[in-house]
Length: 435
Image (cartoon, rainbow, N blue to C red; front, side, top):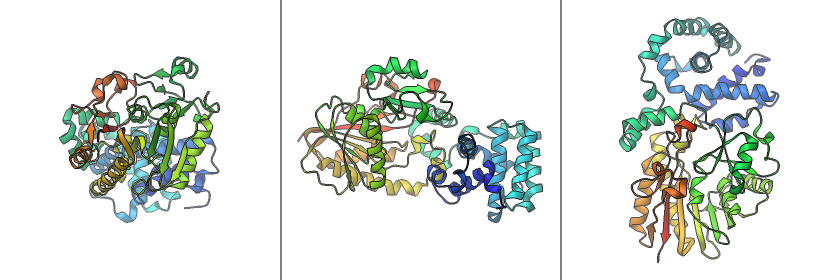
C-alpha cells in the first residue's frame, strides 16, 4: 500500500473485504479494529461501511457477474484485484455511482494497491459490464445468487421455494433501526418524537437516522435501546415476570437482559466473556436498570438456588441476522452447524438444571437452520421428560399469526413484515418444567 493510500475510503473498503472473505473475520470486528478508520471523520467512516456492506450484502450477485465476464477464475495471487473489481461492480450495481466515476476510482485502486498489472483487466471488465449489464443480469437467477448454495438447499427443504425466494429478497436490503422502549406504555409519545413507526410487536422502527444513533432523542436519557424487532420477541414469551428470579444465559450485549429488568424481574445476566459483560453493565447503567452479572460458562454454571425462569439465547450460526450482518452468510460453512448443535444441546441441558418445578424455559436462536431450532427442542423434549412445550399464542407477538409454527413455536423470517422493512430471523420455543 502506497503512502497516503490508507486515507482513501475505497482502499479501506477493499482491505475490509479481504479481511472478511479471506481472513474469515466478522465485519464488525474488522471494522472496529481497523487502525486506518480512526483518523476518518464520521462521514468517511460511514462511506467505508456502506461500500464494504454493499459488496458483502450482494456478494453472490457480484461474483455471478464476474463469472460471466471472465474466461477463467481470477488467480489467488490476484485476490486483491478481485476485491477491487467487486467494489467497482457494487458501485455500479447497488450504489448507482455514475459509471465514469465508478470506473475511474476503481481502476485507480489497482495502482494504489500494487495491482497495476491488473489495471487493464479491471478497466475492461467494468466497461464491458456497463455495455452489457442488461443481458448479463437477465441471465442470472438473482435470488439464488444471493445465498450460498448449501444454505439455499437447506432453506428450500425447510421453507419451500417461494418462501426461500422471499427470504433472499428480504436479505437484499439494509435493515432499518429498531428500538425497544424501557416503558412500552410510552410508545405513542416516542414514536412521534422520533418520527418512528410502532410495529405490531411493540418495537419502534426508525427508517432514517441521519447521523449517529447516540445522538437520537432519548438515547442519553436511557429511554430506549437498539434491538431488532425479532430479537425483542423471545423475552416476551416469559410472560409476567415481575418479582421473579430470571437468568439470561449468553446475555451479552444485553438487550434481553434490559427487557427482563424493565419488566420487573430480578435478573442474573450470565456470559462467558467478562469483556462482553462490561458492555452489558454499561448498557444497564445508561437506561437506569440493574442486574447481577456473572462471568461464567453457562454449561458449567451452578446457581445457588433454582430460578423461576431461564432465557437461553444460544450461540448459533446467526443466519437470520444477515440483514444487519451481511458477512454472516459468507463466513459460515456447513460444518459449523455440526459444532454449534453440540454446544446448544449442552446449554439446554445445563439450563434445565437451573430452573425450579413450574418454571419457564425459553430457548432461542437467531438462525434459520432447523437443526439449531426445532430439531434441538425435539431432541431435548425426548431426553428430558420433565419439560413440556407451551405453545406461543399470536396475541403474545402482536397478533402476528404467521410468526407461529404448527408446533406452537416462534419463527420469524427476514421475509416477514416485508412492507415495513423486514425483521431478523429468530426461532424460540417455550418450555415448562412440570416435575
